[in-house]
Amino acid sequence: MRDYLLTLCVTAAVTYLLTGPVRKFAIATGAMPEIRARDVHREPTPRLGGIAMFFGLCAGLLVADHLQNLNSVFELSNEPRALLSGAALIWLIGVLDDKFELDALIKLGAQMISAGVMVIQGLTILWLPIPGVGVVALTKGQGTLLTVALVVLTINAVNFVDGLDGLAAGMVCIAAAAFFLYAYRLWYGYGIEAAAPATLFAAILMGMCLGFLPHNMHPARIFMGDSGSMLIGLILAASAISITGQVDADVLKIFEGSTREATHAALPVFIPLLLPLTIIAIPMADLILAIVRRTWNGQSPFAADRGHLHHRLLEIGHSHSRAVLIMYFWSALIAFGTLAYSVHSTSMWIVLVVVLLSAIGLVLLLLPRFTPRAPRWAESFVPPRYRRRKRVATEPLAESAVQVPASVEEPMEERIPVPAGVNGATAIGHRSRFTDRRKAGTSS
Image (cartoon, rainbow, N blue to C red; front, side, top):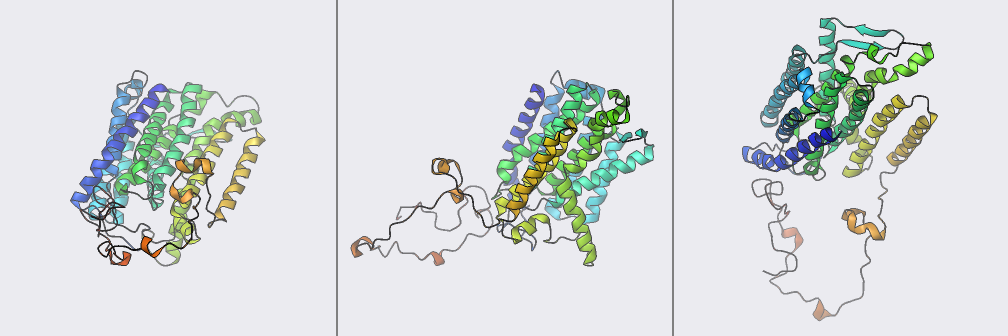
């Protein structure tokens, strides 16, 4: 566990430190497109955040290769190299798309090719554990098709939810955390070495998201773009493929005893069929609804619109930050609820807790106008919007006390906002909204 935490911290540190220079590079190269009709942000914001995330991935793999307890992953398996090859290809296509706006079919072809590159190097689904049947071996063609389909679906599902500041990175981080706990339990608890690559991929993915989130939270200073969303989607899919199609159920000796006992014992192995879907349940639902909605309206399934789940949360009155937190809540509830059920499948407390938390989530959805207020003692630790407003005295002041020199008088409406550019609100340095850069309280 110590080596995994070290890898996670190094990945997060590299990603965090490189995001600032990458932001300056994105502004200098003009990777800051104009605001589109479906966008939520109000200021042009640079993209290409996936560059920092990719180098964080490389740093995490490099550190893990030099750690004694994780070096065996690279010696006994070719999956880390397969992941890096597919990630490099999809990342390069994403960088080009962030700069030149590639066609959707080109990106779809690149996603299939990236999945094919991983399949050629051994990162593919070899068999599936099916309840009531056991382990079913797949042919080479079946394994390739299933692997490519899972990669493409996961990449596009993550890409679809990348519509609010910090939404995609946070949801993928939650999914990676649940997947890490599950894979680590198989590797450490059951002694299955085949689960080690998936555990490493999940730890690195968490580090990439945690390192990028401070720059991407609302208001975001940089977006990950397709170079980041497709990258983390591919790594999430690679983790699911590694542990779903590489871990043999027969190793756990679960198909013994009565049918009921075998079913409960098989849950840790059957969960890979569900966990990859539950951790991206919200993005996948958004993807399916978007395809149905656009096809019903006579549009292309790849056409962009403002009908995603996060857009609906904003329309019913939720703020930007609250919409993101609600999506976080449902993702964590589904992922960790499934994880807890796989560990203690006979406990009814888990079901009751999930039902209770679901009811709380529904109540939060129905209170879009409710703004929580922190207690007095905690106001210094929360953002200003969560603090109680102080009452201002309304006593009339003397005329001499309200006289303002003519040189200082300046109507607020005459201040012209700075346009986006090298010296604008989204550029390098201070995020000023007005051309007047004098500090408060000064007259010159």
